[in-house]
Length: 350
Image 1 (cartoon, rainbow, N blue to C red):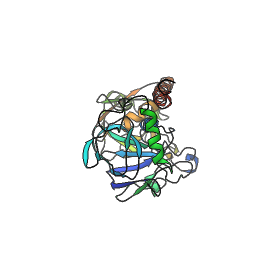
Image 2: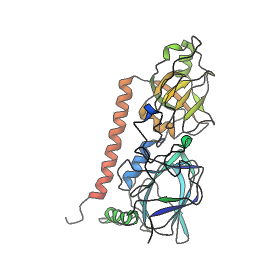
Image 3: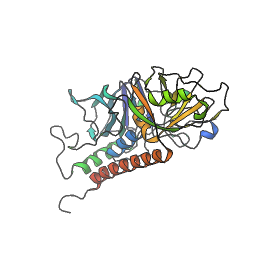
Image 4: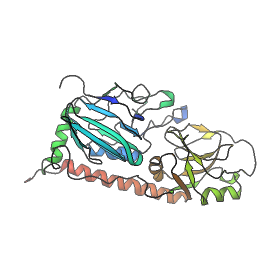
């Protein structure tokens, strides 16, 4: 192949954006972190193709794109369990999920509706090489920052890859298969896969949270309703926040509060009494009362829920939330290390 390494977008999907794990360190000047809604799934996809965990990939919301590959490309699809298929030499076959897959020039990947979950993540060996902005390649749609012109993908886009992406893909796949035959049939994948890490397994999905700064401003009845009932995710939810439909939460005293910094997982309650969970594209400050803060360990699971699904908020302590986050981090590191051993295993007889 000649020319710059790239992937062509033949169909953009419902909402497909370039994301990494966020543009951190700028919230004090009004720049939101943004990044992947389910960062753990993106990191796992990066590990599967031999990347460092901070490289940019694609976040795919609900219906996904159709992509045409211009050269050898090693990719992995994680997160939501989509119906995805490959077109290889005019023949269609299912695309393996949660494992590395090698494609060649002229191959296509089509990602349709998910069977389970809401957001999938596609990583490519070498990463998607859009221009960094403030240390990140992630897309912030509201400000048209980062990614591909600060927007979702559209038909005809050409996604730039690392300059050595084609050679890197074949070299890494050869590493993975040097001691064992590839998966039966096509020499396109391996026999092993990793388990999805953030897909919810219950409904209502339990979301653990610590007390918010303004918990004391709410009536006892409101606190009981928040913790005992369940909420349904509103269709008016997006990457900025998940609006909740359910019991309205009343304040003990009316009146405004001072605007304060917000964080990923802050649960705000505006004047209508319906909570909003702030997500990856959350504003940097807000003046709504904060009833709770979602535990970091549950953010990815919440991001995999679609409008109409139910959640139940369960109170936990700050030490418990920290322990959950630490355990989740350690589990991811164990999975990443196991994948890296697949790449670095010595050849047979050595």
